[in-house]
Length: 85
Image 1: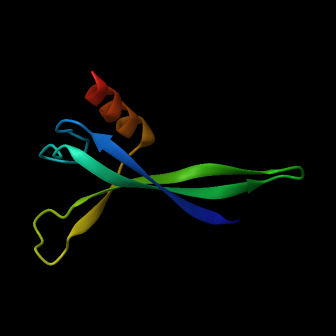
Image 2: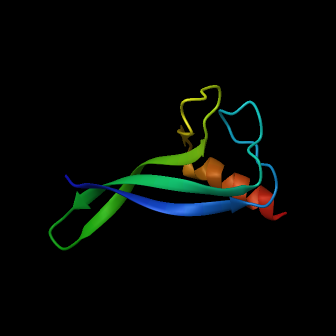
Image 3: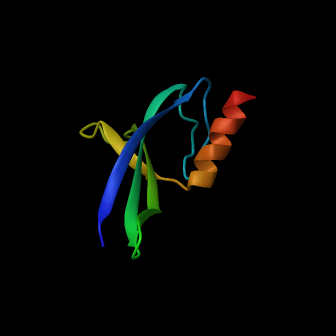
């Protein structure tokens, strides 16, 4: 089985409160990594998402500059949709 990580960027125009965080994230751009694994069959290769991670500023550790927040795609989509309204 093959795995891959794809990267994209999301943008919040206002502060966004996400599950797992006590404080809202400030408006801005954030990198998203999506981990996927291949599903091979005889005719083609497809990919199944195994994890989604949002890169956010590190909380509580001056030596770290960023941390990865695991998030479901549904929660990320909901936060982005709420930001549009």
